[in-house]
Length: 228
Image (cartoon, rainbow, N blue to C red; front, side, top):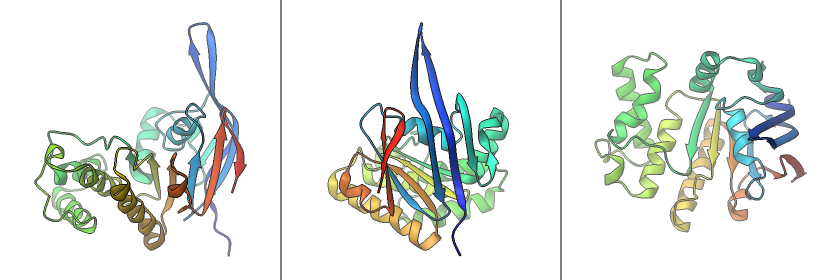
């Protein structure tokens, strides 16, 4: 039985007004992503990769076009509704980790659960289990400044999984890591995809990383020019 589309972009445009000049970051982009698929997004700088991921992740809204996430057109939602969808259905892993430096690893992972009204005991238990699952059971009380780059990205992955999302969006997740650590992080993301049947959309400049995905979409000038 074929998997359903968990994400569908239809004729999506994103235009920014820069003074008197219009800059089109996305130009009529259309793409379907199946539930449980691992898709890599590649393309040169300025091709629209991050803009596309931000739109899928409810961090930005398109200028025009439709974006369906699990059957709901998120392009029509207001900020409050987008925040709810983002918190429940999407997990984010960024190149720069985006951890709060004043919080411990445990507190960073617990944070997204607060906004979903999960009680404190469950937050503590789930965050601890997630950190153990990424090999950081002995680093629960360490703050980001006391962790290596690879460890910080592991915390970020645990945080991304905190609300049991349907989709994991990874924007250059190994970009600030050495090659060996980057390989370990990619293997972890691949394992999440396979064991949890999680939909993964990963932006990467690295051809070797992209080959881990089941499918690759190449962007140029705000549109998809090739799929593998």
